Image (tube, rainbow, N blue to C red):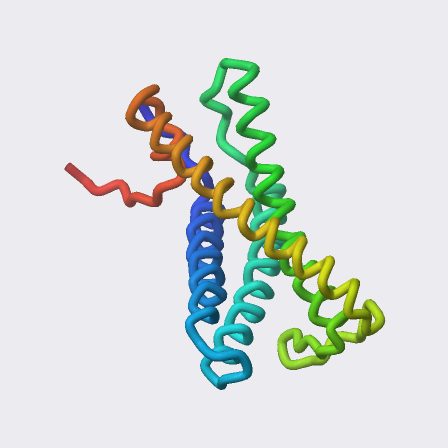
Length: 180
């Protein structure tokens, strides 16, 4: 049986975004190991911000590539499984796009400028400590939700591979066809 894989561009962006998310989460967790205001702590926050920007741009490019190349036909014949798969992917995309936006809003509400690819973004929101607190809490809450959603996404792929024994996981792995 021939496995109908995702287009290599989609596979690249899937794993690239995964790597960026791991690095973004690691950098913000590492931040807590340093004293407030210290250069290493500020560096962790800066790296986290730039990774968030890369995630946002990569997700937008992946969505464009998904529209352009399409997905292989669905393996699921179960309506509930198809619904859950689509819901999970929609939630992942929404969180990956929303988290960087919330980060920009809470930084600007805290009267901090946000640099986007070398340019300072215009302030979208006024300086407001209460707004900053609200958006920072939302950013952290949704960031934590992303941990669990990624775990569920990974568990689902492994479950389908080892328990259901279908090709869901194989379709997202890049493998060259080598001659036998």
